[in-house]
Image (cartoon, rainbow, N blue to C red; front, side):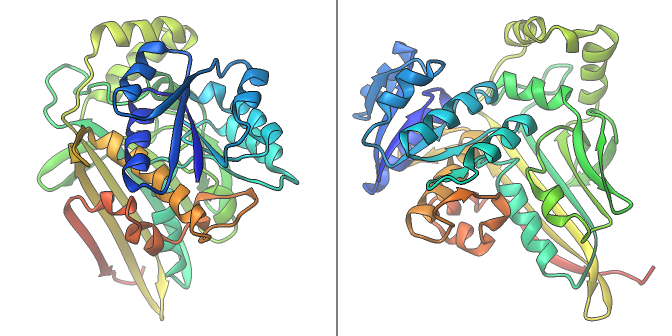
Length: 369
């Protein structure tokens, strides 16, 4: 399969590296940043300098490719998906933006090729897990999805380091969040709904952030009483971000906030990704709760050092592209994350990157309410 990888940042480089190593994918990276392309050139990966904001140039550059993987910031997703449809190639991306996903769904309407957005960690893998747990229950009560991309060794007041896209981080902290409460779909505010929990002896907090549910609200509407997604951080992070965004009104100056975070919050490759999903409901007349959790740490993959967020994000989209190539997924139209079988994902050569430490997969019997 010949794949155009649009976006040669950290995640894009990881995707290119993973796909190239299999020998089953011919990868060419598109970007306007010559420096980023030079890093891939040095690894023997094909590159092409293309301004992805120019839809016409991108459409022409896509001729002869089978699929496009979009690793650019969320605000370019609609433009890139439109170019993919015009060029007649399959489309995969990592966007967490709700508006962009709705637009891509409209683009996919009537398409002869596949359009699969939200193929990363959250949205992405987290929705695959949640849907699988939900299917195991006869009468579903609630589904809780929690994900954290965290520094392994927090040192600053935010207890946070930049591990992925700053644009994506700000977007999920500022945009309204989808949820189901009392069996009704509704919008809730970001940074609200704070809760605290402990896992493996470490204290965490979680709060509403946008985009992590993907299309799961629609899929489970009428089938679940409560469904929500929250980002996991170390205690105290949420209060400081709320001070910045609300009290100092930085939510109205995203460019200023981005510059501030880039200037003051260092990045790290020593990170950990925490995944925690629960589904509660009835099974054979008993109230049960199924739990799925993973902790994934930075490590060397295929001879290259990768952060945990690189492993989980790049690994997820590569697994889904691979499953698509194998015919496991639908071959045209809009594809939801919950159409991916969890077992097939975890058994995939890329999905096996999710075999992290501190693995727990259990079912607890609960007393009837």
